[in-house]
Image 1 (spheres, helix red, strand yellow):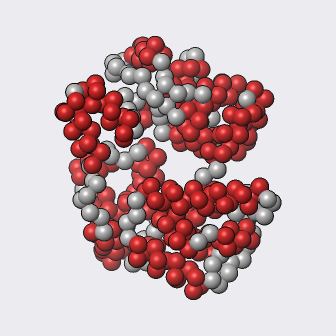
Image 2 (image 1 turned 90 degrees about the horizontal axis):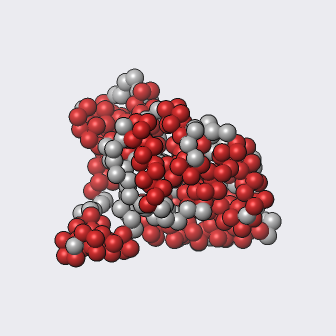
Image 3 (image 1 turned 180 degrees about the horizontal axis):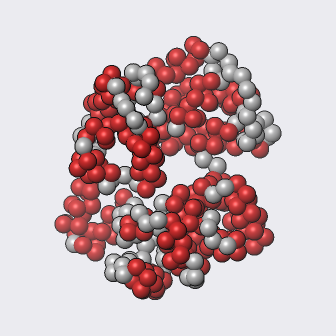
Length: 337
């Protein structure tokens, strides 16, 4: 690896370096708490590493220590503490129900065995199943993984499955029992699956975002023939903050004029490097320096505040797009200095 700055490599590469220095046992323990897509990215980064000089390793460790010291213990594990408190106080059923209402449903671990299987294996398991069984399964998997599986099914099945996912609310107990029987027969999986609440539209939008453009557009066009309002809802959900990186430079400059520096500083705290660079590249050098200093000075920010700022900027962007001032999907060269 070249360079001594941790900022010169991606987050996945920094994580890879850190894990390699931890040793196998500790690294494995950390990865148990990381999602499917993130493990895949880190794995690719680890496989690509041939050597790391001591200066670079030290820079990664220092970056990690700096970010760690900015965090407080307040709030860490608070949801687990609150859930346990409610269950112990009110009993399993009442406490769990109230905790789900206050905190959101507890993430299901019943599909973990599927998350780590080869995609081809999962496709073979699901290929001949009823679309409802396929829909329930994909709705519980990582959206990127679900998109890859869906992409290997026939076009008519893809459209049917996405429609079913988009209209999901709560999966019926009978359907979960059928899925349990199917997986037990094919994989000897004996886990007892429970009926769960699903935000079907958001889940379907996430899967569509992860599909290739051709498949995405074909499915949306098919959905529009039977339910135009559903297509509109999915398209709205698919337009996320990261999509702003697709603005051409003129469009980005016009958008930046309409948002406040505070909105931008908070929103970019939760943005990926691609979007950050797009924003920085369309600002003057001095404005960029001020923005970066502002972001660093703010320290850790609540996720809810980041999401609120991103939502506000998205609403401005959508309004400008509706008025024809900006458009997504194109890019041009040349940055402002």
